[in-house]
Figure 1: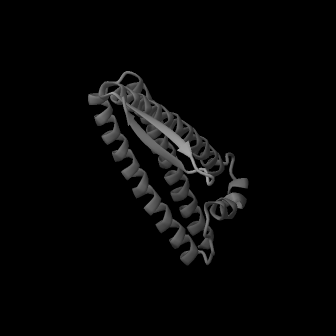
Figure 2: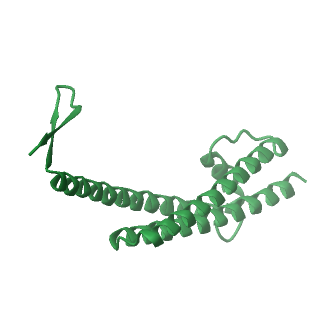
Figure 3: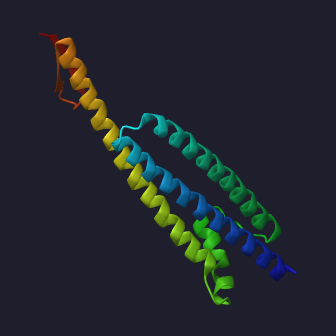
Length: 165
């Protein structure tokens, strides 16, 4: 009976990881699309892309809640003490070794790869936004005839001053 429970939970977890991979893949695509829209200064479509991205994040959050629920049930029903994803992967490792493929292990590796790509793309997007904001600030200062200077104190904190020209 316990082996059947373990099998059932294994397939539930594997299906959940597959769905997490799909949603994170969508999120990565949306993050790349966001960058393209930033480059094109297409603010109308950017706004809808950000809303679409938020919907995907909400679905990921629901899947994360489901993940927590499944881990709690595995702990309760199979007398385990799984607190981290790595514990879960380790727990099912023996079960996967009896199968032809290591689906959970492979999905987890794919998920980690996609998340790292999303993080890198988000950093690129943020860098672009910061540069654009800096350019807009310079343009505004030029138009208003102001010049802004930044200096640093001994602790490395920035202090800005504006001078009217």
